[in-house]
Amino acid sequence: MSLLGGNDLKEQQKINELELKINREKQKLDKKLTRQKILLGTFLIDTLEKDQVHGLKEYIAKRLPQYLTRETDRELLKGLIENLGGTMVAENNEDKANIERNI
Image (cartoon, rainbow, N blue to C red; front, side, top):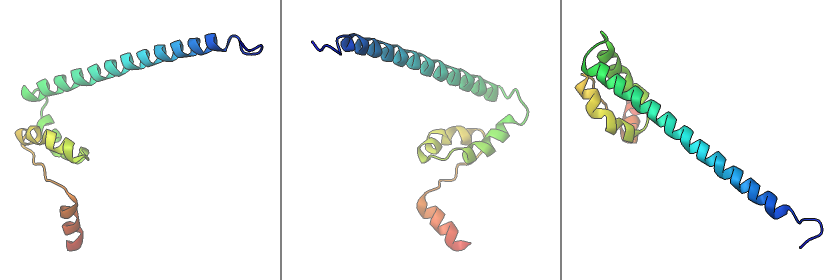
């Protein structure tokens, strides 16, 4: 036992316990935020399916493809966008290069 550091182990244990509590609280918050997003998404889908807001389908069909930047996200929502009457133009590096050459 060190003359100067006898309580270091206890202090380190307290720090570890506090870090565990922080991590648990972060996980709870992440789950809460995910649940909020899911509920908002289901509300929006229900509103779209029932066509409750005039022009909403058209707006989403037009704007959602512009909002999505990842190809995997674009593929995931392609069917939804097409069902709303929109189109999802596939953008890959080859297409972008061809567009830039034609400009």
